[in-house]
Length: 264
Length: 326
Image 1: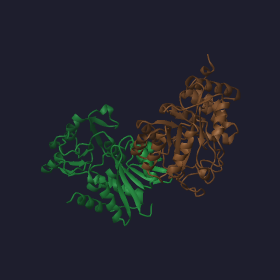
Image 2 (image 1 turned 45 degrees about the vertical axis):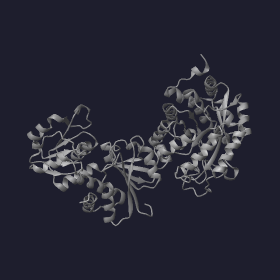
Image 3 (image 1 turned 60 degrees about the vertical axis):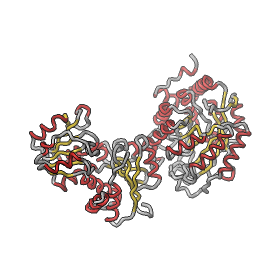
Image 4 (image 1 turned 180 degrees about the vertical axis):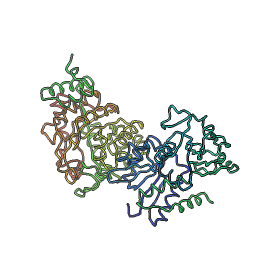
């Protein structure tokens, strides 16, 4: 750690809407630590050189987000078992001889599940890195789940079914929680491949935290519970913060900081 | 069938080249010279190098200029001195000028661009070996007239690379080499032979990596321990293995510029001539001012190549001095 405190940042592309600085600065302040948190956009194809630069510049830790989570492992000196199992890294921790890659997404997801009381079975919509982290987390607890995606034959998840069958499975099973692990929702006008009626009486756990997503906001008129992506964001960030500082942060300070950053 | 056809460039063939016995090595070197003749005739090239800064943000275990070595005086030359040295090289008939530094943060990219402009303006090919930081710098220096860039990969063993170069990764290095190419540079790379923990298998990987990167320049240096580093007591690398590596590079890569590096001369009198006999075709004259040369501590008690020595080596190798194509 430098005399100015922890030097931290988030890398991804394009990072236009990241809430990470607000979240991590709030955690630093509430823990009584000094430091700074930087937005470090890196175009795909230039990650390795950039990570070397950040190491040489003295960074203590880096959050990694889309699209770099799965491309970052070759640029790590060490990989944690969780990151290795997920095949993706979302947190880099400085060690004397290079970056160690961790993945706090599965742990963050489980912390979110526990804090909101989400129950199985889970329907995971999506088959990318976020869906893989969710499936990994649920498997680690033995919680029943099934993923749905457009082309299950090309999906890397062990249990995946065609997207068209999602509504039927949700309606026919005792499915309690539907997880949005797709990029849908980052644009305000995005739709969603599950009919609203299928969500009635269930929990819609969204990993996306765009407050302007109209489809999700319209669920307010239905008898279903909605939890947005800030919960997962803060929980995985809290685990990353612990890896960097050795301290458990105050997550409520982070939620308040998100509200403030949105001018509410 | 000529002598070069006796050597195949499969993985096992390359390994056999590196492990060649003395008699076999004789044919290996002859084959390398034959390949060189096919592609370059009897032409050999002289470059001039100036090492303009030894300040370094890296902490490579083998390098005397590593950040944590407090046993050397740090310097960055002023621009006028660098351009003067280039001008002297030009007057001596040298047409390629090599600007080399440690991974220094002690200068502004614009400052270096100005120097490149001045040297390129004399009619010289400008070659850089300064580490790499941003794509903007690469564009700036390319537009200023630099056309070639050397970034040694040191070893193709990712684990050994990580141990030797804290905070850096082989994957990142390879990415940078590809980035350099994308920005219009002719690229050069190569290993440091004799690093503790290196294997012949990984040296074969070094050769294949150089081929896959489609390098324009390839080189091999023999590891020599530098004072004040964690490896200061490690054994030196093998000159004989280095010469076999050089010949294998020539046979595999064919049309690349391969320098006879000074470590060979430092470890064995006549070592650079032996490099030419093993397929090298470049020798680099050191123009770093004598007052600071000792601080550019790549290794301890360096051998500094003079113009007379360089011309003597080329003559004794039976070759003729020519200018590198720009």
